[in-house]
Image (tube, helix red, strand yellow):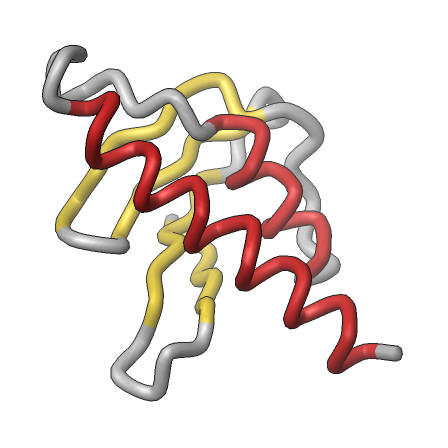
Length: 89
C-alpha cells in the first residue's frame, strides 16, 4: 500500500511539474501554481503543513514550499527519480 501511495504522489508531482513549466513561462518566477500538489506530497510524507501558502521554483523539479503553519519544505526529485521532501529551518 505504501508503494502505491508513493507512486501516486510521484505521478501527481511529475504532472504538476511538467504543467508548471508551461504555466511558469506566463507567470513570474516566484509564482508557481502547484501549491495543492506540493501540499499533497508533503502530507503523504507524513509531515505537517496544512495548506501551502507560497511556492517558489528553486530549479528544475525543485521547489520551496511555505506552509500556513510556518513550516518550510524543499520538494524535489532526486537522481534516482524519487520525490524527496526536506524540512527547512
